[in-house]
Length: 422
Image (cartoon, rainbow, N blue to C red; front, side, top):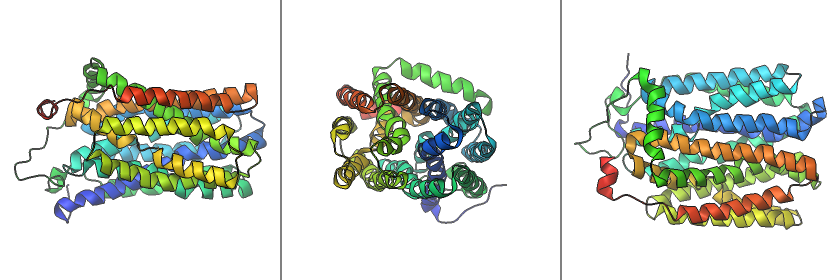
């Protein structure tokens, strides 16, 4: 039975708030491997390459799950998909409290949590924004994407403190508990579509007609059909390559290895986690601002600027003195740019592939993001294990960011008429 909810079109903001909380929990889960790296080394004697492998697999599956999750949301339902994903995240991280061997860490945090968090990711934000908003899509997408930053801001210092004083096990139990608490909230407060509660999307006119829902039996097929259509275009591959570099230079490198890199330079784990939290604070500002800018300016030029500035900061960081001043400057500068690439990328994907295919195609593009992140998570761990430092990993990542900046300007934008027809 469908309950009619109040607030009219404004209920879209309630939905956005619930999605923000779900994304917040997923962000906490994805931040945890960076905090757990050193405690797991100390507790079990695992080397950094083995610990990085689980993080890399989790990041990769997080991205690979995205397009299929987007297709499931289109057919099986957003509420069902997200609720089940949160429960899977809770069970997998809770089971990891019993692990004794590296393969168990890979199975729980790498495979199970990777798949679960992949359904509570940027594709969820893109799907909800396209369903519930007609106006201000860029701004709302920016706010939802900023949940990654907010999750880091909330969870990282707390998890680092708990890990430093209580070990790794309380950290995984906290993450499991948060995910378990959010599952019923999503089930109760997240309607499938505006029409399910007798409303229209925010900003929709009286002549608005909702697109037809896809059949649940065709979710897997539709995901690959959307990919096949998109893969024929240059736009898809340019956005995919750019987002590969985006993941390479954020989640996989900074998210997984920044705390360990700071520890190599003599910084306590809690202080390094505070640095990431500071990045998260400024990313909240930068990503929201990026969404606002995306509604007003050419998203290709925004992407070019974001990637170029990110590349510069990554190349310069290893040569800094790692003082409070230099690290704080890096945190502010890099934080403003962390996930700012998402709103313009979603905008370009929606313009090129339409409101229905757009979120699914973006899911495939986001898979490229996580493939890049997995490459950096595993690759930087190998570099550190073999070279004893992270210098080469950061310079290579920064160089790749400059390539992504140039590729962004090569994306072609369709005319408004063609975009609507898609």
